[in-house]
Length: 515
Image (cartoon, rainbow, N blue to C red; front, side):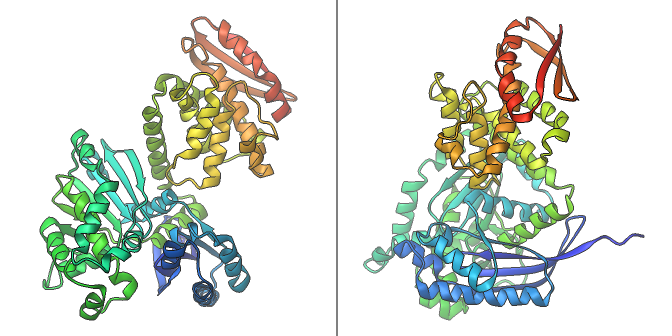
């Protein structure tokens, strides 16, 4: 039997409260076999939330930690790694300087990821640890991912991701924001609860539209809360926090100072200080559901980064599951802005079909295909604001959203593709286009040229395209279209976009229609 290929890789999480690294073996099937898991506390989050920037001493300490991580990777002969940074660095005004210092002193390149990228990696890890996730998502699932700087909310129903939202209230941020009040009141937990309620008052209205049978909690030291709740039990479910246990932990923590928690439970201060706000946040979300408790998969960002490395290195079969989640959330976003789903669906199908036919010409792969698909679904969202010049509004709306697993650069690419789906052409003096690097500008133009053609072929919303085939020959590309109904308007609209397509691809488009 042929042995499955393996690679030794590393995932580094430059977190807000801790810096951690996991070195593991990954296989072609996507399995992860940890070899080393190390972590060290950091002050970068405290610096950022208190003063808006990372102090020099914290930056030096961080570089020292990462230098030791880099040496450990050399010892394991790691060739591929992914280092990511979250809120602590992301929101620091001097983040570029700190990232440069890290690169110069350690040789490591750290990517600053946004909130939904962070959650996406955690999803990848979660899928591997919860075997009945699909059943839970069918029956109604609320997933709460609590970070140091904010929390992300995901709503699943009928097996699909239907809603996401981000609230800029994390466990450490909450404590730092209200630190002055903690010194002058004995009811600090009540102050936290009141402030939290001002930010998530809409939560109960969410339950009115759909109840949740299951709740999954990620982050927020939920594992430590679970351990505190089960400290006096010899045997218990280490992956489920029931309502009574959470209430017990909350009652315990609200009357204890961080110093008392440190002394009694031998926890690090960074962890002890966020336990109370974390318990309050999860308690509030659980109260808004009909769930018996919170599922605690005990996954980490670095697990998800490793899973992503496995998917990229070996192109695993599970990758499609994550793409399905992305597309499901994008369709929800389209419905939120009242798009014509029938029209956008037809445009999406034709755009992807054209993309696939032109692969030998443009040489783009799965990720670029996904950009085109998302832009096709959302190309008309700007009509929610104004029908006149809606393509500009579409780009603005997409740029202001967060799409699961998409980096900020990728959002800008998708926004630009949608921006140019109609009559307007990309121009160097357009700020949204000019801000892209050269390769992304070319990609946007090529994918927008496809979207223009696909949209043109459904411009009347009445003609039914039954079949579309492409034949690339020499300097021409022939679009063979078979449809029902009057095709006059579609033919006219198609001709309006010939010049841009020819300019971008160097191929003259010709249409052959069969009614």
